[in-house]
Image 1 (cartoon, helix red, strand yellow):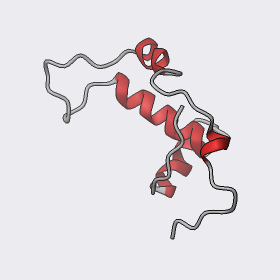
Image 2 (image 1 turned 60 degrees about the vertical axis):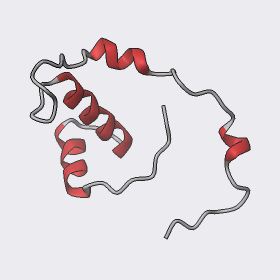
Image 3 (image 1 turned 90 degrees about the vertical axis):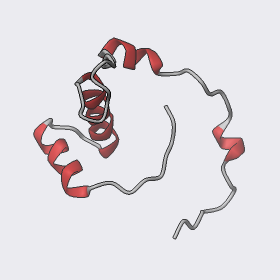
Length: 80
């Protein structure tokens, strides 16, 4: 997993959480990403094959290795 700071549509996220009985925004976003990645999209060329849920799950844990505690600043950050 990767930690990312982004602006999201709170109403859409709340609706996903309500509809699927999810406890967190993280769960809602991950569900939405998996659903979109598994379905055809108008933004993906018709010849491209959508990823299967198994392929998406296989991505977990690849591509990065590090110590987040060593990277994070000691005090609170101001991203405003």
